[in-house]
Image (cartoon, rainbow, N blue to C red; front, side, top):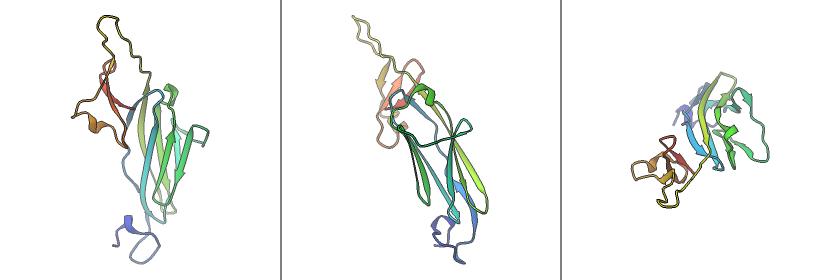
Length: 152
């Protein structure tokens, strides 16, 4: 009790403080995947949140949802496209100050080709050590062309 992250009201035990953000991880996605970003902040008073992609403020739309409460803000794009790649920045601000965190999002086109005789694909399911790459229940695939895991 008494820590900034536990404060809900401005009481003597909860001194005013500028927002502090948890770091967001970058993500590599395949076109058509769901993008889910969560920005968590502490601060007193509770901060307001804004989201930017490559310096331009994000606006809610058919495929883009933004949900915010006192402690966090979430961005969700139901089906990402290559043009959704970029730097996504969350800005948390209150009367004391502001802080921002950025996540680099990379969207690739998955081209699975097979040769008639071998049946070899350009993607495979991740092995056990790579499965921790995906969070929020995503399925992990290793993309040979870019030599890195991706989530679906």
